[in-house]
Length: 362
Ligand SMILES: [Zn+2]
Ligand SMILES: [Zn+2]
Image (cartoon, rainbow, N blue to C red):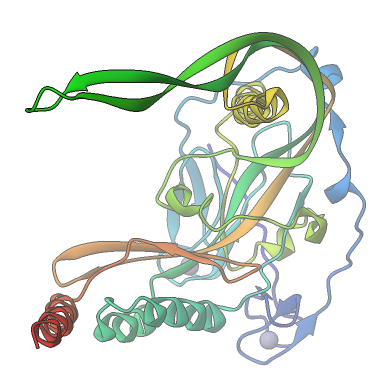
């Protein structure tokens, strides 16, 4: 299936403009020309009623679709995967954006606010704060070009819940009994022994809780999703109306997890939070929940894209992945360890412990 590429040629030099997180505008990397974006903050923050949407909700199964594209700059031909809608030409790096195929389009996005360079600085601070991380890794990362900006699709949910529950509140009862025994001379020895028992009281109750902007990742393909929850929270108040201009120069995918499935995931998350609430409300020393029913009301949703810098690289024969929140700079990744630093730390600890023993022996 052929798709046309949406692109933004610079009005003064004709090069392709990309979104600049620093300026918050479209910018030409060749001549410095800027084009401001009209920020209407309406649809991005608008919530849709889930139950009325779901009655007519239909999802077209596209299967595996090959999207055929032709670069407007170099004429090179390349493909996008089924749900990919923004990337770049593999031959000349020209940004390539196409229309979304799902009927439900992203209503808004949180624009990147952290530049590629700032993302690298956040990473460096993070890696330096990990004492055992090898110094040369941050250097290696700084030289890597594999730091890509991704817009990640999310469903967010608001809900008001009322929960009825039945269960038991456990209270500890301390009891003491006398233990009698005889010593080797035949004298009676009485010893008080404390035992703890739990007494269960039946309880019933109701609790209400409202949730706002519970974010459910809508596409689990690719490495970017491994870290996307670790760099939360996402300030959805910063979302602006969806406009492909914000995506120029970045990568983006549409949702794979459908709205009803995302709602099920949201319910699972809410359920575990509500169970905590029930236990807190039951009180006592221990709690048992026998049965509960949750009623969901005023369920609202939004379909948004969140900004994430993602790095992947190999270093000393091992593959590393890091992600940086494109709004806050929060970093997530596997922590590598420097063997030399660990050995050094062990030696220092042994010297300290050895010194303590030595002084105790004096
Ligand atoms: Zn230009
Ligand atoms: Zn090209």
